[in-house]
Length: 416
Image (cartoon, rainbow, N blue to C red; front, side, top):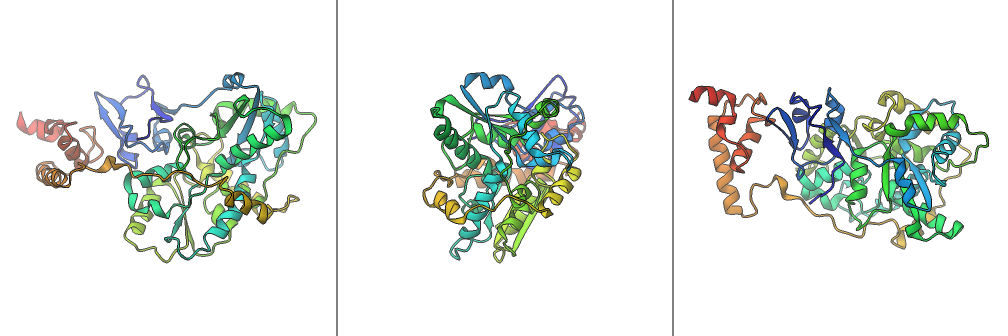
């Protein structure tokens, strides 16, 4: 069970408007006593509630720059989406140098790790024995969604670490070799666009322990980055990513980089759910690769970014179409990392039966029958006034012992 969640509620700001409850893709939110309540066992940290809350009551818990004091040597890994947060005429080397001046000793380009992933995945999906479509492992919110709602698709997920984790592993190795620091003396921090990424550092998927020590949101330090960048005088070359690697920041970017022709790229968690439903029914077995991203536009749409996602996506697109003086990753080098097991998952991911009514099949059937009975009683308006997103969710809550029939306002009035 996921024990850490980046997404939390500020009760003082919440007025129980139900916006978040209605948009939550896993029905993980209820409104009780005029305050939203997050059902942690169902939350996938997609950040949809953060995006739609008009009162900013939902937020993502991330680290502060003060945490750098815990380590002798600190590494920043800016998210690929950072390329879309600045105008095209700004040298990203200068931006990365600006980040370095905030207290980091080293900056590692996540896009370079995406280039490594590109090469490895391109070779893996040639295997005709893989269950199709192969599902990308980039978006941790989608991986959690599959665990919670589509466990039969777990075997379709490609067992490759995300570029964030690959970058952290490679950066730590480089620092140890170049500067002689021990692993425990090095702090590696992701400059994040996404609460799901933050959660996956504390509670990893596919690996026992993350290669990162924390995560700082882009939104939290963006102003500091801008100010620091302006004072950079000597620009050290830090950018390593090719345009193809940077293109992973927008929906469809990784599929285009990999060069697979028969793919589906879907952005927006509700759209992802609809396609996964089709996939679960076996209707997409003729597709080679599925790239599902929880945020609209892909990582450029992450709620911890600052730029309008459509503007950011346009910038990433222009970068991906531009020329580069950076050579593509050596294929032998990338495949060697893969064959040595340095960028592959080590742990099987397990289904999370939070949507199941009961582990005993007999009891589960009885509860389904009880829900059907309740549905004949409930008005079926899905008005949300009871604090559950739908009448069916209320019926489930009643069967689970977490709500009562009188929570339905219509029935409550009828009984008076």
